Length: 166
Image 1 (cartoon, rainbow, N blue to C red):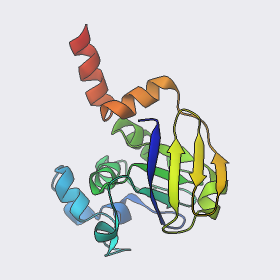
Image 2 (tube, helix red, strand yellow):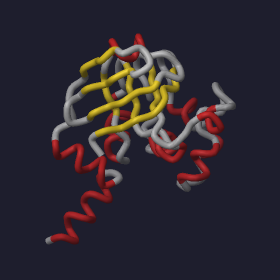
Image 3 (cartoon, rainbow, N blue to C red):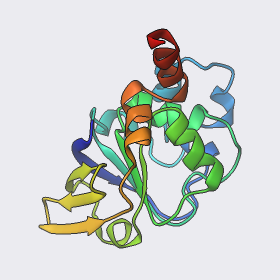
């Protein structure tokens, strides 16, 4: 789970949780239903363009807005394997990790990566490679514990597995 590969889907600053999953769909926690409406208000073609493993690239304050976990669940359900941004709203960052969606802070990568670029991300090393441009970027590596949480599918799944092992 440390190596991720996919195409970049780029968006700007202040992508809020209501843009990621519009509030009118918050009557469900069904990941498939949330995924079907992911990003539809700013990019109606998003769910048709995204493929499993693709990555979201954002600007400043990605995931601002409400504290609901629906936003990272919708992204993950749509096939997004990782979000790279200049910065994250704190609650979105925690919800992303808690639901098993890696969120990498890397301003240089977020500013330079283009829509559709082919990316490779190594969470253990904090390395982001853009195969389209040949450039490599560095973010803070994910510690082993967080990689285990992400690999398990999130904090709840990780905790259940740990409790079952004891």
